[in-house]
Length: 375
Image (cartoon, rainbow, N blue to C red; front, side, top):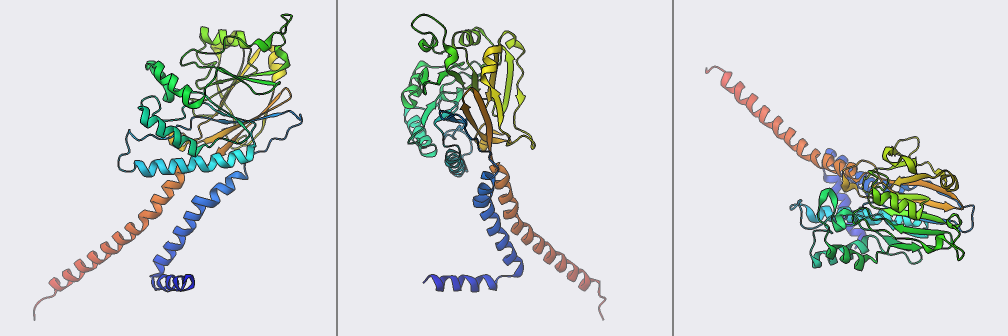
């Protein structure tokens, strides 16, 4: 049966006009490239990070996935948009997890586009859909913190306690996570101004500060060092972070600044040009601790729906007292979708051209007949 079907398809294909045969071949090649080869080729560009310390910690950082909702805009093509965005996120997430082999996976907020405005039923549906796109890892610890699209709070928006509580219940949000003897991660929420009040591990039984014995990481949705407030100074003073990871800006940025000069903090691009796009950056966390210099890294969005051209995942390794960081850039899906629109419009343009030619020929023939004098 398969051979007969292939034979029939081949005969039908050969009966087509040469122009249509070429078009079909171009369309098939475009689909294969956009849906298969482009992803495979992109993976070859990603940098690998090797560990020197046997107890190194591999961290995957997921910024602003913001899965699309069901209640705003795009009524005509909402289903198709959601399907394509979900498939894109799921495919790349699976590949970056395989590449990173993480010990910890950190989601930096804005998990959903409509989390803060959805009712209980919709939120549950979004949560289940989120889980199908970003399934839990069998061995890695997974950490979720909320963003303004999850609980509200952007531009003076009200933050409802019920919405905050709902996020915590679904995503098991905590004030802090002790990853191992060498690393502790703190949940710094600039939206609700909540943070761990103290870390008992920082002081031993005799009252001596032993914070230099392990690495302390801040996780925040909104940048911590931007527009520093009393909350910022207190969090830094009490918990003494070695490095801060945040999202919200959708771009890859970083800042290094002394804690006394926070009001002058200016974020600079990180790995967003062709020369350094896949570079592994090394930061000496011991040096930052000694000099009281703060380091914050902004992780780019992993969703092509956020209106930025550069999309990717953060990949960090705590190797002893060295932080190694790179961005696993992904492809811009909009470019692929635009190529489909262009190719799909070619038959319309071709048929329009053929029709215009026929109309012009008909007009010319009629004008010639009228121009002839009767005998």
